[in-house]
Amino acid sequence: MINEFKGKVWKYGDDINTDVIFPGKYTYQKMEPEEMAKYALEDLDPEFVNKVSDGDILVAGKNFGMGSSREQAAIAIKYAGIRVIIAKSFSRIYFRNAINAGMPAIKSPEAVEAIENGEEIVVDMKNGKIITSKGEFVFPPYPKTVMEILENNGLINFIKNKIKNS
Amino acid sequence: MGKTFAEKLFSNKSGRDVFAGAIVSVEPDYVMSHDNAAAISGTFKKIGVKQIKYPERVVIILDHEIPAPKESSASNHKEIRTFVNEQGIDNFYDVNNGICHQVFTEQGFALPGKLIVGSDSHTTTYGAMGAFSAGIGRSEVAAIWATGELWFSVPETIKIIINGQMSKFISPKDIALYIIGQIGADGGDYKAIEFTGEVVDNMSVADRMVLTNMAAEMGAKNGYVLPDQKTLDYLKGRAKVDFTPIYSDEDANYYKTLTFDISNISASVAKPHTVDNYVPITEVEGIKLDQALIGTCTNGRLEDLRDAAKVLDGKKVKIRTLVIPASWNVYKDAMKEGLLEIFIDAGAIILNPGCGPCLGAHQGVMAPGERTFSTANRNFKGRMGCRDAEIYLGSPASVAASAITGKITNPEGK
Image (cartoon, rainbow over all chains, first blue to last red):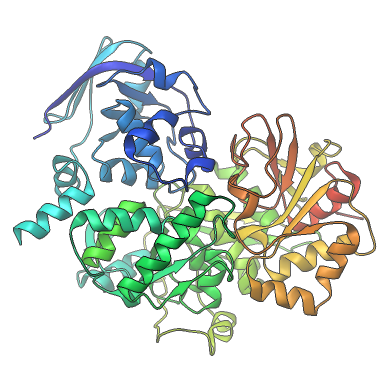
């Protein structure tokens, strides 16, 4: 069960697109997730991969992950160390890619407004709460299907386990 | 209560009466992928299923890095060919066909009433034929290959009504950029979009594909145009299988309805680095350019090439000008009509049909400080391979007029 995430925040702005998260020139190079992680946010914040630590939390403005369907944009961030992303809103495909990669993507415009770059926050998945220095913010729980995918650490494991158990 | 196109389609597919907000697990009719099929096949193997459940529903079209510009892309392609043979995938289109969205449509897979998904964000294009088509991620394609199905949330629908008289200097691309400028790059996020109104009714099938292609840039899950006689004429002798069109009910419940009158708009431009950074071309006229790009899955059809050729006929370009027909069928038709000769005489470079420079992988990469005016659908920072370069977006006529002068130029009156 996924219960809680606690980590340091890296905060960015609105409309962060997939080309700055994971540049197109790498998209058709075959890479393992660990290598993808080296290019996470390369064209937005080239220093990000050197600053981020395992367990950190990414916070962004509206329409995070707009653009291409490239899944590496979710996987690269996850393997760079990010456990959960909170944004004012997500682009649809990015939201799906994050869930399918086993990385919760939480929409909470109020929390994003309140959270300061660099602070430590807690995301309580069980009770749908984000605990920040400026107070607590609730978010609606995921539907059952989505929660099952996250608990299996992504869509592929989810299907693997489903096939194994059927 | 009436249903939207999306609600009807997912009701049919799931065998339940569903409305926006419901989550359903259903079987798509087709699942498209391109060069990323190599990575997808790796993920598929990890699932541990030996055979693709429905190989006849799988379509693979190589287009992103063709012909292979380097060893790694060649190896990717090789891996895909081997996988296609192992799995008995008949719907495979190698590097000599063209851009996936054009080839998929030309080959008759994009059909009214079908649910189509693809590991490319511009999969929305097939909605021009009355299909429900949406982009998905690579793992999701692998999951469909293994199990035949995928989870979807039934989207709410925005109805976009486009009315007015289209001036002869205005193209569907100008309309799309104008609308995105009004509603924003997230104006359609998670939503289904139905394009309707007299302007859409009067558009050719190719023109409608520009709108549904650009629906992705509104953040939409899909874009839809209701199929009419023009659609049926286009599909005659082309459709791969039988189909039944689906139409929205009169009393369907829409998230919102937006009406645009395009009678008085001028040619549109999206400035760097977002597609919703809209201005009328009159506001950016004179900006110096280094490269022009005409074509791609957005504007690489015969109708688009005609628009560009009309402007370029008998003229010379001042900057590097790349022309990419969307498929070899388009290429051949353009050749027969004499359009290619016009491009060559003007000094343009005609590239082989494919994604080319649009995503910065090869062909026409920019240097730092350079500026391209492009008919593609994205102008994100770094999109064309260089983070210190700028991309402006516009219509084929606008880009062609600007190629001649070397600066952004309004095609009106040229």
